[in-house]
Length: 275
Image: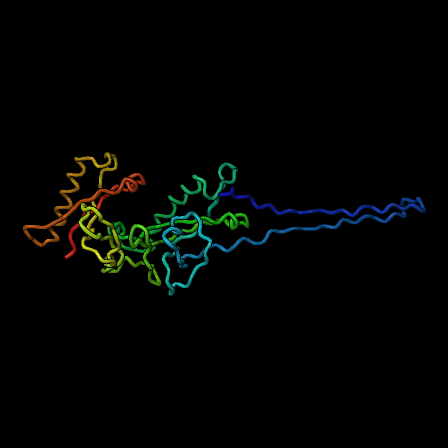
């Protein structure tokens, strides 16, 4: 992407040349030159997005760092809702940074995810079990050139690994509803240990459901055996409670993916068959 340019107002001063008097030779008779001032002003920057605005994004568009599409009515089909709008401020030590620079994107990656809970509600476990995620956008190069200096955080729902959920007209506090995870929860197409397993939203046809999250030590190694044993024990206890005393029950503890682990996720999912 092109570098974000600082907007500078250009002021051009055009001086009319003096008219020389050739006939009289009298300097007092020469007309006095008068300056003419021409000011070129930049157009106002485009308006910042609005918290609560809705957008119709594809899965691929939600993964892009910029979104130039217009908002849509929230009662129409849409796949993202803006949870926060902040000031970008891409100046570091007096240097203007590109909107897609690592520094700017790191700022957004830190600022936007915490907006999920306050907007959609629910406790931490409910939020983790949901398929609701936060994505973020900075202005396009053209918008930035026009003076846009904002960033936008949006909540999206993952229907599957490459498709977004259609969202309701309002997402404010949706996870406070007792049945919220029946729509937005994390479910699976089959046993998580089976070939062909795919996580999906619980509103999609499924056979297994993630019923709890199990924290993993922050200082452990990925797929550490001792940590796995402890996590599986915690999952077994949760599944046993859910089975209401049944002597036989199925469960499966699943670590986060390597990508999720690298991104800082330190919890896995406890799965049971959907009955």
